[in-house]
Image 1 (cartoon, rainbow, N blue to C red):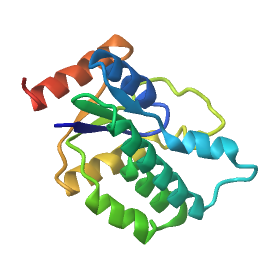
Image 2: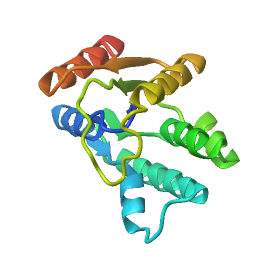
Image 3: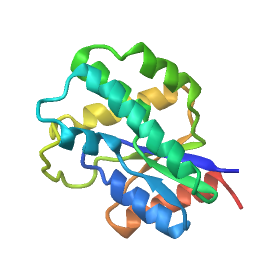
Length: 172
């Protein structure tokens, strides 16, 4: 049985790096953040309609990687992140994303804490709102009664904390 683990959190909290480390440790696949590729290809600022395209691309990548994953699939972001972002930037989320959120299930969430230093990146927008977004993600997880753990620490400590949370939730 494949267990899908979504790694979510504010910008610049080490989600991609954590997914890569966990996938290497578990000898499995991880799903990169599709938004990065989509936004790199745009020759204009992104718009609300781009979020549905990003969401569809993310899910397609996830489904593709699930074909090759062993035991776990680590997903660098998921539709919760797109929903929170859309609600913040545009005041609402598309019906398509809302419907997909209801149907797409993950076995566990790792919520990346904001204890890492901000790393500037042209695609990052809100260095001063990381706590705000962290709180929104955590509140969503609580409201939906989804299983999660907050992952903190730098470098190996962050990975070890994630491993500990996974081992606690999925005892072998």
